[in-house]
Length: 79
Image (cartoon, rainbow, N blue to C red; front, side, top):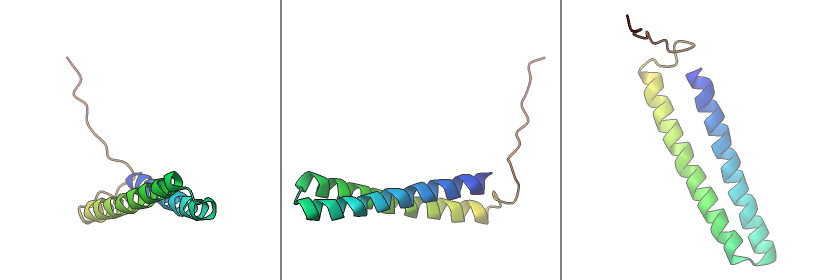
């Protein structure tokens, strides 16, 4: 389950980068400074997100967190 969540977040971050690149395209076409700033923010934020997700996914994979389908926790019930 954890690997699925990491892949889902990674794809969302790629969509943010694509949105930033599209904003750059529209900003150049319409000569809009605000849209250019939005493109920079989306692209840089998406790249940092991809780097962060990749780092922690590799770290967790090395620790064996992706080896099981779900992490189980025993709950202490009050007596």
